[in-house]
Length: 299
Length: 249
Image 1 (cartoon, rainbow over the protein chains, first blue to last red):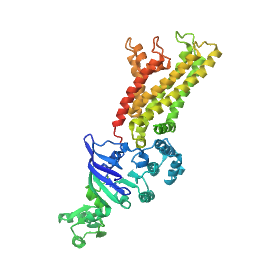
Image 2 (cartoon, rainbow over the protein chains, first blue to last red):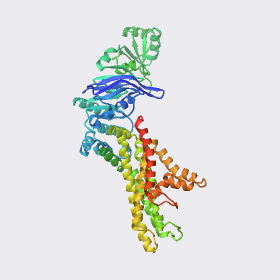
Image 3 (cartoon, rainbow over the protein chains, first blue to last red):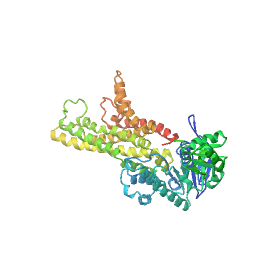
């Protein structure tokens, strides 16, 4: 039985279709990255899985049961969701204790988890004064209270500094090593690339891919990356010539259907200044944009 | 159920707001009781025994119990803590019932403490001032128990109202607006004032407490049943609302 199974899930908020006939599974002991741009329907999907949002149609089950039917939810599923889930006036320790009381978890376990997420020192301060990173770590501690074998984490890297992201990555690996199933959402592919066994990519509420990461990387065509002050100008020339050109930031382009030499000749013929010309490593972001149809602009 | 209730009682006692509401209202009762007992002129009071009249001061906490009931639910929606609460107790009816029991417990306790303190302050002062309270010990106990019951039931109304409206400020303003604005304004209608004081929520709560100013009030137990019916209406509507609602923050 899969740890998490989402089948034909559709959620409509009034006129807005947030999730559209989405299906995917998370097997026991696997880490699955749940990817998509902001607003793609990731959080809505996770909240349906956790029984917080009612599906318009379709089902989401955890070990074969709907969340509300789980006899001991805190010991089965741990969840970290986006947004403030703490009362700003309650201490981190008391926040965990309030969840622990509802789930029959001991205060000793609360202290143990505070230690694990390195929050013991701040545990008795009001959570309202916590930094974003501390809040995320407190949320992770809450998710792990019942020592669950399934974890649902919504953008856990949000607000973490590079050190924190590295800590999280090691932490996720450790959790999966212990045989737990982890469904972790992110809008940044690179964040989960090093940890996820496979990824589910969604865009506008629909699944666009579910595959092991290596398979997705291989699927992508690659191309040549050209960077430098005149890169946009070169891009126009190439486009006029019928090449497939996509922007990669202000001063770089990715060119498909042209060899490095083709591009080099064009550069020489037009006295163009560039600083870099190299095969694109079919960067993860590129695959991501390709799959989701999202632009690389600010969002 | 006991776990969910333990969690609710724990949440209630780990925020400053609930202590401020309870402590502030009890302090208010103590101060007003002191002033009234020391400086009040009780010869002019008509039919109401002075002891009963002044015990109505303890009834101030009923409003605060209502606010406390609202806060127990609405605060969770305001800060998003409803998410972890529902994750731990996914049966929303059970979660809301746990909140109801927590609210009723806190309300009863608040009403009891206020009533006892009020009595402990006024009766020694009365005897020192040589004022006849015109109430028996049995009657005073009825007033204290009545105040505890009225506060508990008002807290239950608050839990229902909080679930129905969920917006903390909106629910509190709505409840206080009803009690201090709508009911008094309706009372302006000739002949309607007594009806309101007998049958409407604030009237039912003073009747439950045994401190109604009416000549012909409901006695404490029927008034308590009436107030419980008001609470039931809000609770059924509120729980139905919370039950089918999407929780997205």
